[in-house]
Length: 560
Image (cartoon, rainbow, N blue to C red; front, side, top):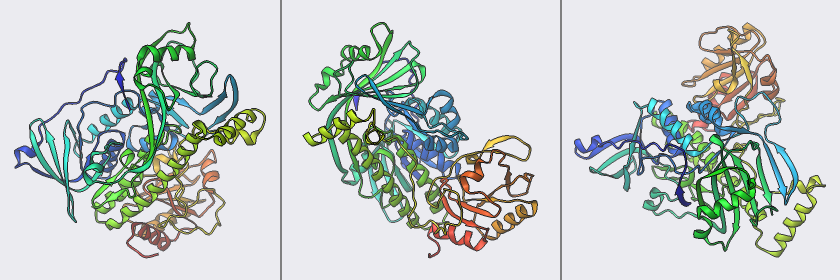
């Protein structure tokens, strides 16, 4: 994207510091070097730090992203951010929404609800400008400064790999230095310097369609719902999308067509004329930021290259429709960092990172597929595609089957890893819908002292046994069996109405009944949860051998 920045946000510039390596012969070492201090790189540094792994983060800039950029953060991403210590702050500032409304011309075709059931800590989506997300992540990283070394205006200039590490050459205002890391995470975006230095092809499709994106401050009480128009009556654009953001800032996307004049369309006066056609002539509004963009759907063939690991836009890019870019990048981090920490602690072989590559390539392919389908519907290229699209829009108000075909962006969903190796086989004996490979559901719980909380606050960051018990004796038995599984760092969470303090365990009650409903909870039902809150296996009854075997197979230290 290209564009200028005008607006009310106070962009903080973070200070450059002379690297200590220049006073130590120009050489340094760290476990992990992260290139890029956007949301993905910062989240990776925080996640690793929370698991005791130190990193250096380098970025050639010294300010958060200019313009709102990524704004739609999904429930699953917010759950990950919550584990990293910034989720509640993001929700408090963000605009919460769950309802989307789709129009054709001036007629509403339908509306949808992304979270029709209650009992979840995090909302379906919030809208929050990327600069706020980055600011909160930086603040959290600074709280972990003993394990996160943030370096602003440090530019990657070269990479050399060996079988045991990566040596990066970095330029600064005070001179050049080199850092050798066991692993390097490339989180440096769609124009990745790391990818270029390694000469890796980034294959995909470039779409010629141009879009104008405008952030504008509006003094009016507009709804928070996501609103999308096909062929709107009020503007010559082919489509218009509106999202409300904090501070009364609205994101408006205009589909311009492939032959639009970029310089003309991003002129602020022309952009504001379009905005006024959307909001009406009598509404006061102020220009904040705009850009004209095209987009690509592309990904690397592999997300690992020797000791270099790619995450976020450096590994894969999609269209902005469906909010799959930033959310996909944060889910990369969630999948990667516990595995990388296990490798660095020598609890697992480096081959464990092959599962990051395969699982997140699957997530990227799913996002690219949905993105391409949306683009085909929004920007039909052939007469047949246009006839199909127009026919669907004509039928949608009256026929549910047609409404299901309307595609204004299939919104980001958590990645389902069912069928991938490393997950335990399931015998189908448990009635709950959460199968091995699926991300965990949240639900309200209460601790032994009666305090209210949320299930996901007790899952994630470490392997966890989640088990259901009907009596104090069963609670004690679960603790003994879990200990016998010999899983390093294992946590034990028991759902029981006999909630009481138990050494080495967390006992929670399920007064609302939602944990039981969502997990098929009955006495003896046991889950083993990966550190990224995906179900690794489930059993009717707790068996320490089954638990230990499932975990070691996941790590790649024991054959299937």
